[in-house]
Length: 300
Image 1 (cartoon, rainbow, N blue to C red):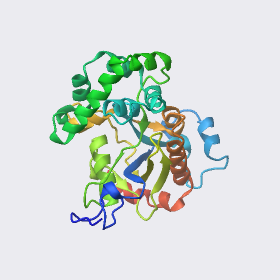
Image 2: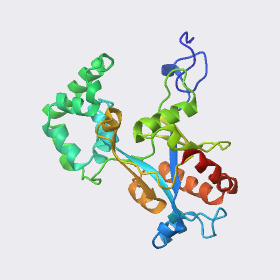
Image 3: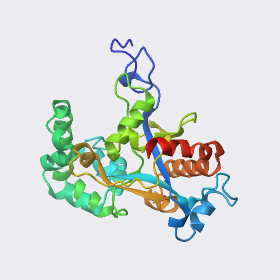
Image 4: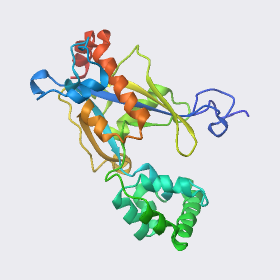
């Protein structure tokens, strides 16, 4: 199928649209890190050390010195899937999987609040956008059917709540039309963290880290991450005046490898492996360490 509008916004190739793309659904993001001076590190992370290697770091940076920038979703994936109607009413297994990932607060909200309120809270200022009109109507009907039949109440009561907070991960998102990979990664990173390009430096001449997996919706995904270094004194915080950040992000923080592995859900195996690979690169890729001073001079 020809694409008169240009290249596919998913894979970047010409001759087809995103809807007809055979490649995995692709997202691009940035794994940002900072190196804390040894004097500021208290104690030794034995658990994180064992998760990577028992040998000494080639770059001289140990796990407790390296901190990664993680963001928490505002809403869990399961909650968003149910509100957006991304399921078939007769696929109870899939619906159960989504409920299993929801927090107690989200379960209470979906059972007690009007759909209009849930939709507006999720989309913020974009809740009345024309592009979501059809999705709104179909999603509302599905939730109403689940509630009126008693199915939603029964499933929520049946499935125990395991997580008190939504998922943690790295800033990422999908490309806009005609946007290249790195531009997409930087745009998504800027939007979700509130940081600007002069506050970090993407590590060049290094192949991005990739995770590929099938979601429980049976869709094939690939997430591609670039590494970026930040000044050791760069702090981050939620900005309640940033509409995009408030709509998508629940929290943001710098964490050690050990704490990051605790925050990322156990079933997110690929994300945990990505984190371990990033840590291994930072501890063993000597060329990276040699260029740090030049990088810091540019961004500090």
